[in-house]
Image (cartoon, one colour):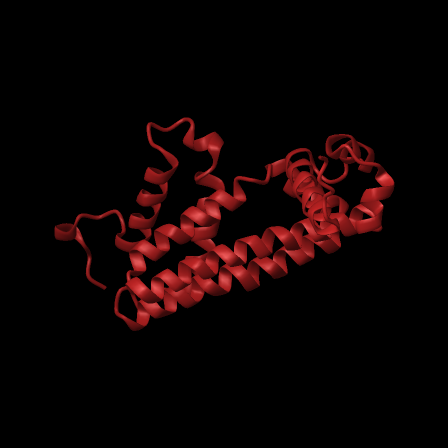
Length: 204
C-alpha cells in the first residue's frame, strides 16, 4: 500500500534538498526545475509551499539556523550540568565547524552577491544565535576566573569564528595528519591556554 506523505513531510523534503543544492552549487545557479527533478515532484507543488525561489532560500536559511540554535541549546544545557568551560568550548567549536562545513565557500559568496537581504539575515542570525552564546560562555569563564579579564571578549569571538571558518575546513584538515576532532581540540586548547608551556608563561 502506498503511504501518502503529509504536507509537512513534503515541506521538510523540499527544505532538505534545497539546502543541499543551495549550499553546494550556489543560490543563483540552482533552478526550481532542478529541485523538482531531484524531489520527483512538480514545480507547482514546490510553489505551493514556497511562492518563489527567494522565499525558499530564506526558509532554508532560517531552518538551518533553527537547527543550529537547537544544538547550541543542547550544549548550553550540558554546560549547566557539567560546569566545564573548556569542554563546552570544544563542543561549541565542533558544532560551528560541522555547520559551516555544510556550506561551500562559493555558495556563501553567491548568496552575498545575489541575495543581499538574505545575506543580511544570515549576519543577524549568526550574531543572535552564535556570537551571543559564545560571548555569554566567555563572560561566564571570566567570572569564574578561567578566562583572562584583560582580553576583550568581542576580539576573542572574532578570532575564534574566523579560525574555525578558515582553518577547521575539510580542505585544510585533509592536508594535516589529524582528524577534525583533534584539530578542534588543539584550537580550543590554544585559545584557552595559549602556546607557551606553563614554565614559560609571561605573567601580565
